[in-house]
Length: 90
Image (cartoon, rainbow, N blue to C red; front, top):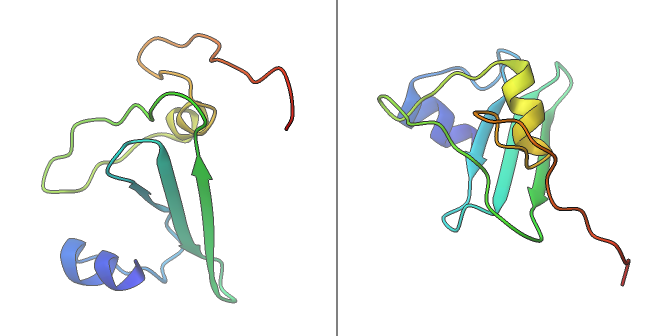
């Protein structure tokens, strides 16, 4: 993914920015970033629903930290409301 950031988007994946990728089905999100020591990867798959994704211009979008927080909690950042929550584990 770091190679894709560098080649496709023309960005430096080691500059400390967060790069978020969504899976084809819309229920998987991966975030990569370089923290100065090494690359880190965060992945989250929703059990229900899809991530709300803004329209991309030139394949790249910029979102605010609050929009990212809403997205990771499966909250529609365009119309914030509480999302479905599992009631049982297992």
